[in-house]
Image (cartoon, rainbow, N blue to C red):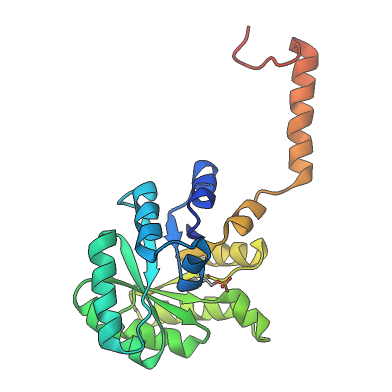
Amino acid sequence: MKLLIDDANLSAIKRIYDLYPCDGVTTNPSILAKTGKWPYEALLAIRAFIGEEADLHAQVIGRDAETMAAEGRRIASLLGRNTYIKIPAVPQGLKAMRILSGEGLRVTATAVYTVQQAYLAGKAGADFAAPYVNRIDNLGGDGVETACRIHDLYRVNNMKTQILAASFKNTRQVLALAEYGAAAATASPEVIEGMMKNADVDAAVEAFIADFESLCGPGKNMLEG
Ligand code: E4P
């Protein structure tokens, strides 16, 4: 499963990229607003840092299909070939998905809360559909189950669309999708870091260091001797 960072803050992205194996970055208008920067300023800086090969997802804002399609073309032309145009899975968005996927651009259907939205986005040519796992949970549904149903629907219908599971509140939700074979998930820096947060592991590593230093001396390591 690809793992992407759901953030536009460059220092947070750098912090995660430095240590964690990640495949790219996803953004949405709310995430971009938090940076306080102009959208293309933030997005171009992210692209420059993650490189041309990594996946970058950027969302359109327009309310009609033609505007969405025009925004999508501009996003792709400025941010490179491995950029996915995020388009909300609403009726006008379905039309925009058909237009842009027909032009060979990469499309991610976003704001996916239901299996039927994902089905229609797949038929409209989306490469990814992003079910909002935690938001579905908060509505009393089952976000992981919905994402798994969408994954199955694409496979059983031989559709090319894959899921990019999104909106995670905890690491358990992410792990469940990885175990199910989801193609991709995007999570906040905090959730990604949470996957490795474990006081028992930290204590075990500290005990190894202490035992080594009691044998070889303080500050020593396997570069010595
Ligand atoms: C990604 O595509 C979504 O925009 C994002 O994951 C939504 O996350 P949130 O529910 O934490 O806002």
